[in-house]
Image (cartoon, rainbow, N blue to C red; front, top):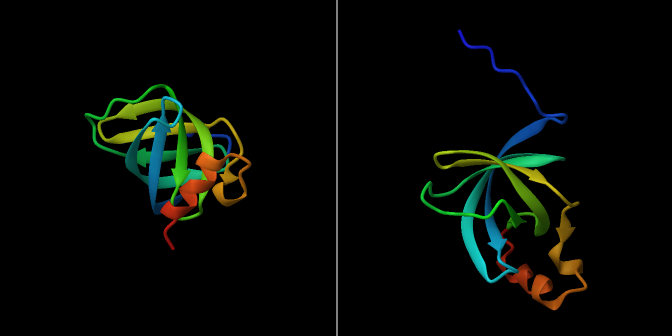
Length: 107
């Protein structure tokens, strides 16, 4: 039996939420599914063939929050990310292009 050591400093909760990854100064985006989340990171699923930069923005369509993130690991269609900023409610953003993301929030 294999022993899995936990490297995270905070606990994650299993979820199933729609997400969107933005990169290249919000010029490109790709849909994803948020599979688990915690205070410091998330596990996402997206097509294995989808190329991404190491740093991007992750948008949680359920909560309406946007944060900067960094890819930590990738295996097939799963991606582990570290949050680099506190999640921001897009409806409260000072930036118009960020506030416009509120149309993508699902309830």
